[in-house]
Amino acid sequence: MPTARRRRRLPDEVRTAVVRAVLCLALTLVGIVLAVLSSYADSWLMTPALMAMGLGVFGTMWCLLEILISRQVAAQRVRAPNSASPMGGSRTPADPPQYRQPSQAQPQGQSQSQPRPRVPQPPPQSRPPYAQPPQAQPQQPQRPGTQPPPHPGGPGPRQAGATTR
Figure 1: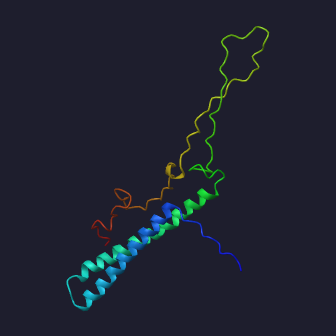
Figure 2: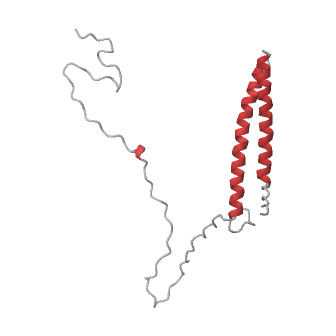
């Protein structure tokens, strides 16, 4: 006869999220029942019950997402290389670069061929593509007897009330 495997206990944050979801689901079901009964009775309680039901559905979805997220966090914590630490498996911060201090006086026998310490330079400023200056548009030749509008997109001679006859 095979032995029954014991299930591992859920982490505390997952259990609290599950309890919160069950409570929110229970209150949502109570709101649904109240909305149905008040609709049968043509009661004024139907509107608040429907609003409570909508909030309950939103809250239940929120709690279900919280369960999924807390389970993922707990699973990552268990799989970490050093699971005793709370942030196990995270990357260690990089050490700052070490620069040599230039010596005050160099002996006469040494040449100046030693490289200077490199000082980090800020990246060059590049303009995003939308910040480019506008391209000049070719000029349209004007027909004799017409005037250009006072500003681009403005009324032309026909829209301004001029007659063409």
